[in-house]
Length: 157
Image (cartoon, rainbow, N blue to C red; front, side, top):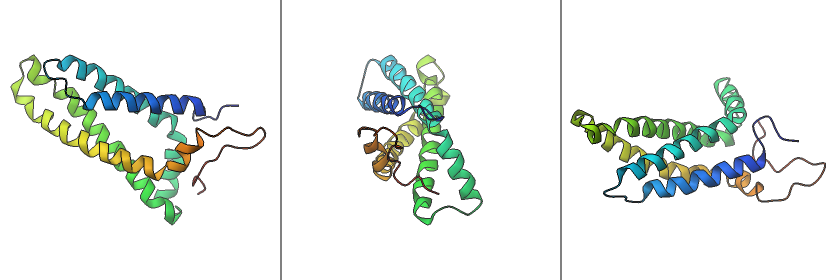
């Protein structure tokens, strides 16, 4: 039976696709900005899907964090995840506005620079995110034993 937040296979598929499109978005496609636009848009959609699939964890962690009842070992993980969501949200929004100079709105060129900085910062935060959630990531590749729950790493609150 699938969990309310999405099945393990769906989460794994979204993570793999998001990673592939993220790598493609960082490749230099000089002379073909449309490709970066398409790849970035697809990557952003996978990012939003990833957050939605993990919304139950985010919601429960936010609740215990705000109530100051969070496990001390999870504070850093939660803060890094929130910073990652913030940085990638800024990167997505500035990426949309960075299209401006390509359609003749030169006044929007600052957004391209902000987009580049936040995208690189976001890439570093993704590495931190994957490292912090490595037990959960590895649990996707382990076979789920019949009658038992999947390994959830440090999800206990």
